[in-house]
Length: 408
Image (tube, rainbow, N blue to C red):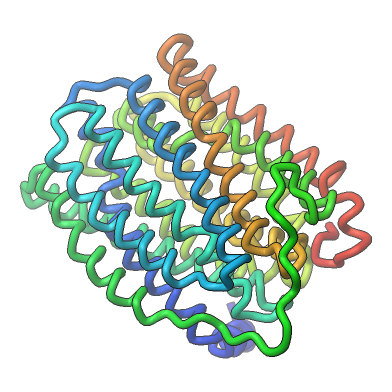
């Protein structure tokens, strides 16, 4: 990257409001705690609690899907109260103090309860945080702002697994490493208390009554949500990726390193790729990213055992998928939603992306256990490739005429 290119990226980054940077720092700390534990959960279930893929699918599916209802609830409440901070603070507090208690679980049902509490916290904070982030910047900065947030979020996802790998290498037990994650959670909560609501000048748009039919939201947004649902049906818990890596012979101490590699790639590329969508359009990046996801899942299903170099390469490729899609998906929600329903729109998006994790994780876990890894990973790849085709050909076809950021 040339000096001019670095300068052209640095200037708009420095121009972003304080709230954007503070939210990013909070996410960095939260994910350093979360991802210190996340790669260890499947290992803890398998080696300590003696639970298999089916239990993992049930735990992740129920926890994510139930918490997703709160993402819609909190998004609707934000539109009506015009207050996001209380939900953000409460969400980070609940998740931060529930996660370390996994160290005391004596059965997979105990892990389920604590993972559920963790995800409830995520459900309370996610839509209000996204709405707060969108309200803090101009429409032309949305890709950059959400990309920066994802980059800092993934920075925490690098720090957490590296810390876990270091502590495991020093001889700490899984339980001791999980308990250590309490400290970054405390710092995260303290910073969340410093957030400020954005000021609104003049009258706010009227908020229509809530409707399960998404009344008030445009048809293009509804089609987009339908395609997100199809993609999510094949987007089961990332813990299956870690389980697969372990099955293919990756040493236990290197599993957190592989996940840290994913986060490092996503951290490096989320900001420039999401910012690129401000100029060239969201649709192109989402289509390419979802197609790349399908290729990655096929590759992981077909990977031969005892090839750690291939596993690390595939996980790096997965990091590029995350960088190209996570921030862009949310920027597109803000593009398609009317201002008075932006919190509700984020609620529907987050609800869909989370609720479908229940069938996605349960189906994936069942296929994995009954038919093997290749069948499970091929199913997910098929969902992703189909969604990648429907996104430009159906979901955003009409929306492109109304908003140039949605064009290919």
